[in-house]
Length: 106
View (cartoon, rainbow, N blue to C red):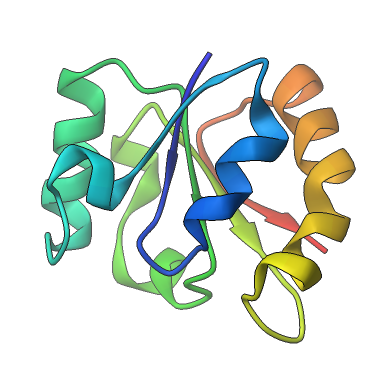
């Protein structure tokens, strides 16, 4: 499974998903891309899901036209130590619930 970590997530989070093929937006050279363009690039490169901290993303895009799940992480902040606690929930969703559109992880 190929995952993309949005630019608002710490790069260190990659280490918690060793069983996946994980890239950051920075790794791919996609920093600053608009959401629609980012999703199109992800589809071209056959990514399985996007992980993001952008809670407004679901209001900015029509996800029904993209066959790609977007996992929106909810936490007090986007630091590695805070988001690390969401990793088990993220992995559970990735293994069971890969529907298209936004999926909220709390």
